[in-house]
Image (cartoon, rainbow, N blue to C red; front, side, top):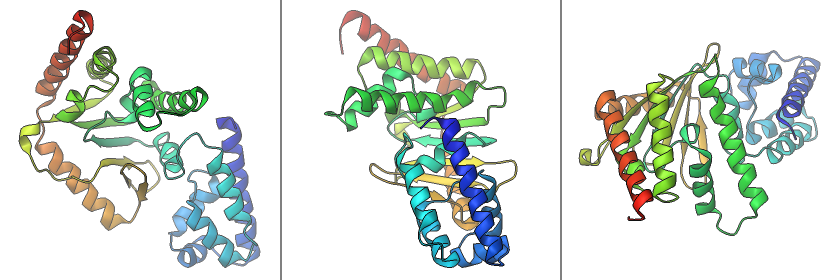
Length: 279
């Protein structure tokens, strides 16, 4: 399903939700309280701005006694997304975020990836997948990254652990291209990147990737991901804890200038290896 059609489908989901909610005589706040989200979120669901997770859709069905229509519709739309079920809403939120902060402990975050690097990462986790599957995943990731080149692009911060620079994903040529791409984005002032040195040792966030997002008319969110699952967090207290962890990471990083120098130095080393055939 094309992205435009998915958006239309989510808008229909929102219209249907509003229709059933009003028929039940419930305000957005009333329904939100019964399905354990805020009334504001119910409003955003109805506008098609945010997409409810499957468990929320199930609770809406139970409260409004709609026979599973919201669960079925939500599941169908999730299944047709090129993203993992736990990530589809995150991808939608990235497109409307005003600020995104990420931490990549081992792999370069998706929004910074080149097609070659994205392909190597995807193949690493799916070594026997079809070419069609690999291309779909890579294309979806690169399409997400287009927001960094848009006129309305979000303010974007990334903290890369030094391990993300030193792990040769895809080989020297791919890594050289990937790090040169990041350096170019930095020099074009499209992104802000700091490197967390390995010498720091234990640090504030040791459990996987972390993404923080801020919005013009929505509360901030945090997203955490491990190898096989991800969790979108919007509880204010939990998001505040995640923001504090990110702040602690940032104060332990190299300066922007030193970070860029390290990225470019690593890129040169990889390019040299690619040219000479050494490792």
